[in-house]
Structure formats: structure tokens, C-alpha cells
Image 1: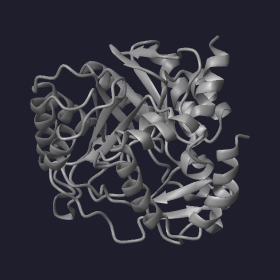
Image 2: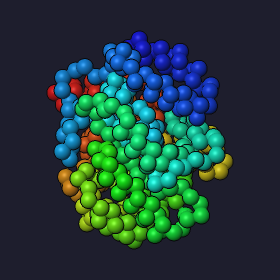
Image 3: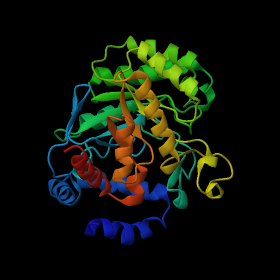
Image 4: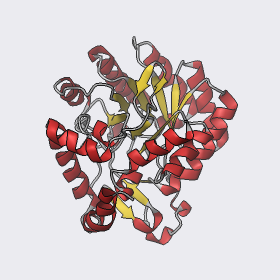
Length: 354
């Protein structure tokens, strides 16, 4: 284990884990954004944490990724970390989810650590500054060459319209139209499966997804479009969503979102007594992998598959690739194991693919 990883896991992490995860997340966003503005700090982080081995670049849907490891949506909702993440061996990140209108999010706490379960209860409620602010932010930020920026789009979290599918479609369309008009982002993800908002899962119903996607297709778009998939639905429903995605020209799927089933925890007694958001990390690992395998077996190379959920080690990442993923995303593994994880995954990927 490298010295910096030892320092994080045995010195810094015990201190951070005594502080609320919401406060730590806010501090990391501020620190990462500040460090990313300065070339010396970017180079310092890259010295310790970037991947420096032989090329492991991949071209997926016409987009070249320097490494096949991406930051999942949810951590950097407002696009503040695009300059520092390349120094941590990430080949790209998925910003968001962004919404047509600003969202204050759910009440605190928005995250709860379940340490024995290697999981976070995520209850953010799509907290973000809205698509207009995101476009302005990315336009004013210098891009790091070779770093891929995906943007996740969700429906604005408003209780009053939670059952109104037409309002939801209009909300997605507004964000999608604005992003395409601005030319911001390398790919777009339609997040239909956020489990901790009033409106987040309306379109996991196949009949409603069949209404949403044709409306999005009416908007001129030259970027790949992906679908963020739920993992707690039966295969019959999941397969129906894939069929609709196929018919509507969706290039790929991200498998998958948070786990809503607290009984899947190794230690369910550690979870909140009432549902307070979806589970990240280890409780998503097997469900994600099984759905990746079934999707690849059913559709072959028709869909790009980005695998996410429960990646804590290089071996976990390799399991996603073996299951059929083209790229992997992570968040919780970085939180629990530190900023050296992505480099470790890249090193292992280089060995496996040499």
C-alpha cells in the first residue's frame, strides 16, 4: 500500500468519519474546486494519484476516455471538480443530476454512513443549482484536455407535481434542450431512477418511459444519450425499459442506481428505521453485476454499458468489466478507501489487458 493511501486510511479517514458526511462532502467540493484552479496543486495530486502506466484509453461511442474509470453522478452535482479529477486517474465524470430548476434538496442529514455495511444512505433529493447555473459554470471553467464530461439530467424535485407525467416530460425536455443548445457536455444521461425524490422514479414505468423518450428525440442532439437504470425492479420490467430504450435510439445504459432495499444490508440494524434514501456501495454490487450480465447477454453490443455500484477494489472493477461493462463509475469506494483507488484500478486494468 502506498504511503499516501496509508495516511488516508489510517490517519485522515478516522478523523473525517467523525464528522457528518454532509459537512465532509461540502468541504471536499470546496477544497477540490480550489485545488483544481491552480496548476501546482493539480500537478502535486497527479504525482501521487494519477495513472502513469501504458495507455489504457478506450473509445466508446466516439468518445475517447484516457482511463475507463469515471466519477458517478451525485458527488459533483454542479460541475465544480472538472479540473482536479483528471489528477486522480479519472477518465471522466458524470456531473449532476442537474434539473430544469434549482433544487434545495431534502432536509439534513442528506447522507448517513453505514460503515459496517460499506454503504452510504443517500438522501440528497437532487440538490443542485439547476441547468442554467451548470451551463454558466462549465462555460466559465477551462476544460482539461482529454477529460470526458457527461451530464446526468433528472426531473426537478417538486412535491406538487410528483404524479404529473406531462410536467415531468416538460422538465426533462427543458434541460435537454438547453444543454444541447449550449453544446455543453460530451454525453447525456437521462436519470429515471433517483429513489430519494418526490418525482425521481415516475419514468421507470415502461408506458411512461415510452412517452418521454420520443419527446427527447425531437430535440437535435449530436451526443450519445444514456439511461440511468433502476436495480430494484424485476427483470421483466427492466427488460421492458431496455426494449423501449432500444426502439428510441438510446446508445447505452448505466447500471445502476441506488438500492432501495435495506434488507440487502449485511447489518440492516444499522440503517435508519424508516426509508431515508437509497443505499450506495456494497449493497448495489451484486444487483448491478447481475443486470449487467443479463443486459449484455440479451442485447450483445447493442448498448454501451457503464457499470456502477459497489466498486471498492480493483477486483470489484474487474468484475464489472467481466460482467460486460465498457466503463465503470464509482463514488463510495473513493470515500471509504481514498483517492488512490482509481489509480489502483487503472494499474490492474493495464495488467489484465496487457
